Amino acid sequence: MQSPVARVYAQALFELASEKGELDKVAAELETFMHSYDALIEARRVLQSPKMRTADYGELIEKMVGGKPSRIFSSFIGLLRAKRRAIELPGILEAFRDLLDSRAGRVRCRVTIAGEADPETLQMVKLFVEKRAPNREQVHIDVKSDPALLGGAVVRVGDKVLDASLRTQLRRLAQSLRETPEGAPQ
Image 1 (cartoon, rainbow, N blue to C red):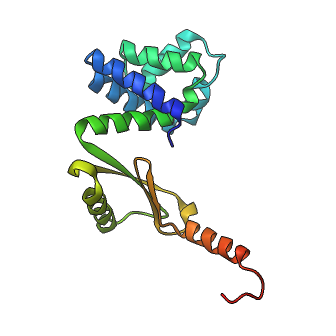
Image 2 (cartoon, rainbow, N blue to C red):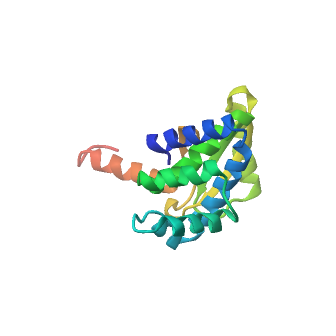
Image 3 (cartoon, one colour):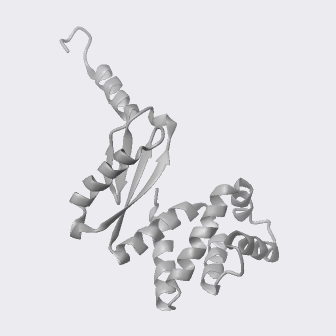
């Protein structure tokens, strides 16, 4: 989920990379970096620690992007560290992707399901979103699994959410039962 802070940082990185003609390079670095960030719990802890030496921090960044990062990316990560905003990285990546998608005429659809997604269901979701996308944008689907949903799916496109999960349906049913007075016909 994107916070307003994450959107501001993503917008700043996007504009600077665009202005310097390094948007594709910075986007690739951010994706690679976030893949390492998501995979390495220890990296997250270290990146958020103010006790790490700057030289060690630079080495860690190089390892996470698979080489020497661009000056823009290195400075950006350093700024996040200095401002203690490394915790915002997942939201920043999401907001940055949204900016890239908007520029390319794509819309990103995030689908969270309880189990594994079958191709037919994903195709139906894609067609559903394409029909409703402004300007008939190309749809890119990101799928995530969350067993806590129990069944069904949650579909998010931008700031719009369609929650058809079993968990939410059960929560609504429980709420309805709590609000119904005893002895009242149901």
